[in-house]
View 1 (tube, rainbow, N blue to C red):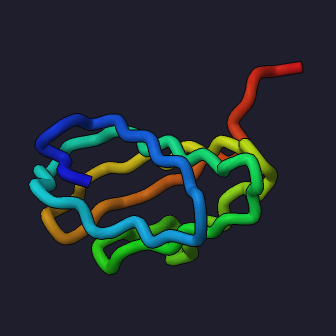
View 2 (view 1 turned 180 degrees about the horizontal axis):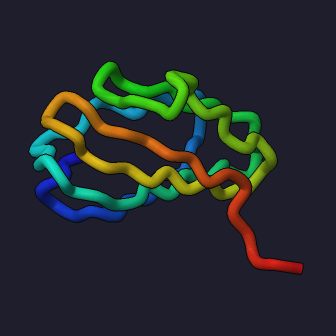
Length: 93
């Protein structure tokens, strides 16, 4: 992810993936990364070394086929990006 391009991103997982460390991170920048499962589901996401998590625990994404999770990020420094996960985002029923 090149944070100079945008502040909101989308990715569909077609297999187990790693979210690499972003480039061009600017302290104070915030945004969202929408993560979608493909029609198969059961995909996992790991994270590059620059990501930080509340309590130090990486979130486990929703693995249901076609599920949507939202990762909110805040750049603390060029090598520290805080991630907060909002899991299984969907319309209210």
